[in-house]
Image (cartoon, rainbow, N blue to C red):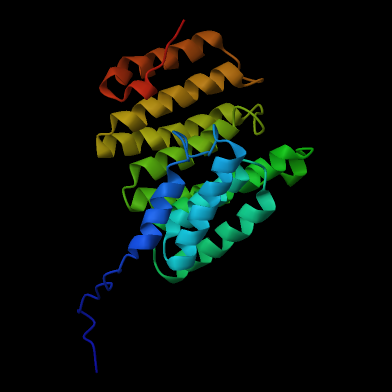
Length: 239
């Protein structure tokens, strides 16, 4: 059968395995607000992992279940378990054109490599690149994934107030926050705009080369003025 080049190919609908989805949701319920799986007993953490593993066994196409399983490990320094999960997931997402979920897989892979490096002697020559976070941000922007974009770009910017801090890090931090502000304006996203100001507040408060408490407070106050329009958890208490 010859298919016309103008024919739009539509993905087949995915049939959700209900037992897999139930296990996934039960496992993810232990993730907590930042999906870091803290505040769990040893038994609860093991149960969460068992449920997520079961969900994946029943439905290997559940991408977030795999991300959650990796997160339940790498936030507990089990990097050698998390990395293969995420590397395999990235390849699967690339092969099956998973769009924004590929970006989220990249972001988590970047997170785990950074955390593994930070947990060692943190030799600067071995510092992971920002490639995974940049790919994640690019994909999130393409798919208008505000949450994914916020976290990927936030991870990039935060790195300049700590391990990437240098005489030139001021320009680097503002280079990425300027990109975020443009995207925030395009999407009319108050959350992204406020996040930019929070990140710059952190930068000037934590940077060794660019420490400026007045500049930090300036950006925190800009974020605070926007925060009433966001969730309560986002609001910043500036003493």
